[in-house]
Image (cartoon, rainbow, N blue to C red):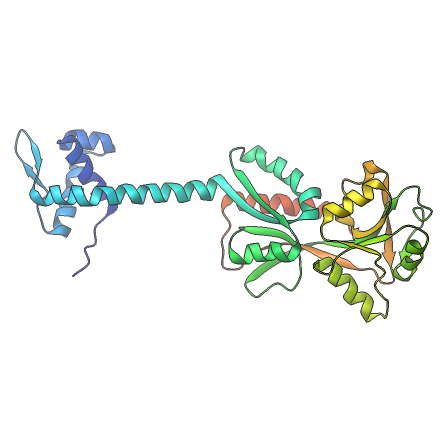
Amino acid sequence: MKHKNYDVNELRAFFEVARHGSFQRAAHSLSLSPSALSRRIASLEAVLEVSLFSRTTRSVLLTSAGQRLREQALPLLQALDNCVQQVAWQGSGTLAVACISSAAMAVFPDALRRFRQYHPDIRIDLFDDTGLRVQQQVASGRAGFGLATLCHPGADIYAEPLLADPYVLALPVEHPWSQRPYITWRELYQISGAGWPLVGLRQSSANRRQIDEQLLALGISAPWFDEVEHLASILGLLRCKNSVVVMPRLALATCAEWGICSVPLREPCIERTIALIRRRESELSRGEQLLWQLLREQLLTLPAAT
């Protein structure tokens, strides 16, 4: 069967005439002139090669072909309109974003506050997780973009590196090492032996694997005493002040009020790279572009590693 190249606006004109039984009233409803409306109906009839209306000086009636078109096509057009409206609402009404937990705590809230000044009605669906899982959320399309640690992104991922985030030793301000200018990785065994267990993330963490790989390359054994799975557990231990922790400097944003300070770790200085990521073939919506830019500005204001 040969394809009929009809126009959706012509269909809408047809349904309005059928609903009102009048070209004049249908034209007014569609904000068209009567002649423009007549041209749309004539074009649709020419494409379908049938007459849709029987016109007299007093009435406009549907032909049998017109009745069949109204009965069968109207539900389809309504379903199409509903589909388009739902997609438009989801695209502009909700933004799905992925973010590593430390940045979700330290960077995302202020960027979101600024975002709300422009788009107070847009909802945020935030996937806060590890760097690897953030990358997976973006690669799968479940998140429009992400803020992640840059760890071997695939060829389908575009990344904009923004911050070198060094690993530091977080410890209570009353700890005897808190005033030191820096601490070497080899010295960390001493701190656990002095009654301050050194806590690190488990090897399921990309941060932990990065540290272990670089220390192993220098012949330094991993100094961990206790291991935990999530950043929230580390923060809880720090708040109780019965442990010291190796963690990214960015994750320390809320710890100062607990009497926690940080000392740089050297020999070597190990850093993770924080980047905004998205799928290469994807185009960000206007809302996503704005939130991307606000997160970018937020990260670029943070102090560089020293």
